[in-house]
Image 1 (tube, one colour):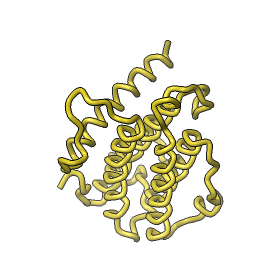
Image 2: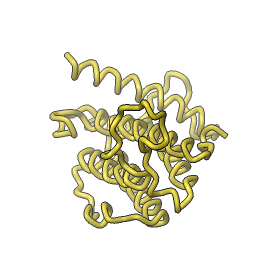
Image 3: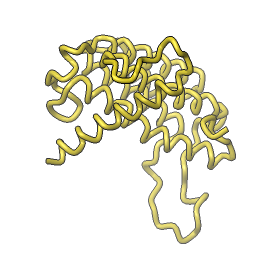
Length: 198
């Protein structure tokens, strides 16, 4: 039952984010008429484009010297009882998003990404992390391009058991927005207005 609710939420999210993506694209030539059928790869890629624009704006906005920033008890009220020892740094959040793109979209396409995970985990410089994240989006777009009307809802081995290509592709964006929200808070804790709020 829980899986059905999650899948229903993801499909609703696909429709909503696809509509938002099409509204934000701003090009009349790319818009479909009401009632027209859109290829699943196009709808999912539009959603990924919106997410990519949002997250790349945030990782570029954080100054390089703040990539090691992570929330700590020191910046909260003294009565705060939360533990912060396992909280990711800004850099680790961005690297996690990079790895997640390869994980989810590798499942979508069935192509094993040619990346060295240990090398990703060892990155600390802003320019390296931003480039790695951008490369993971290139991989994700190529994976989404493999989704067709015939295979979009064929069951595959996904991130959490058996799923479809379309649901894994949509969940990749949904998962990413969770971390995007955290990155936005990291910016604000450092007095930086996120690009999406300007």
